[in-house]
Structure formats: C-alpha cells, structure tokens
Length: 81
Image 1 (tube, rainbow, N blue to C red):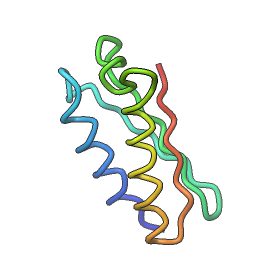
Image 2 (cartoon, one colour):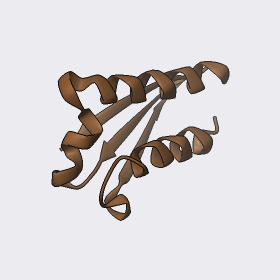
Image 3 (cartoon, rainbow, N blue to C red):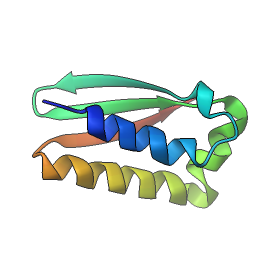
Image 4 (cartoon, one colour):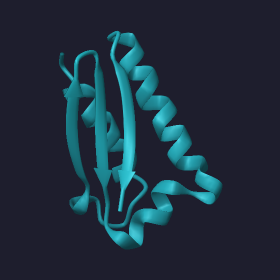
C-alpha cells in the first residue's frame, strides 16, 4: 500500500498552517487495510492545527480520509502533542 501521496498531502496542508514547518513530524502506522498517521508539530503551532473548537483538525482529517478512500485505504490522523 502506497501512503506516500497521502503523507505528502498532510505535510503540505499542515505546512501552510504552521509557523515552523520544519518541525512537522509524521509517523505512519500500517495495520492491514488501515493507516494511522501520527502528526506532531511545534507546541506553539498546535492551536493553528487544531483551530477553534477543532474545526481545522476535523477538516484535515476529512480531506486525508477522503484521499484514502480513493485507494480503498482507511486513513486516520492522530494529532499528538
């Protein structure tokens, strides 16, 4: 299963939101037909990624999940602090 394009899209989306894009870290955990992308950003950028009432985080998850559906892969995004 090729998750490179999905991971690249997540990096692109988050990179345009944060002040320190060089501190973006994404760990990929594959389990059968599902993939979990663990996202870490600088502490001061966490609010930018989550947004008010979690709206931005929800939209990021929706976009990435939709990309996975194209390839018949269940993709989840975990935002870790």
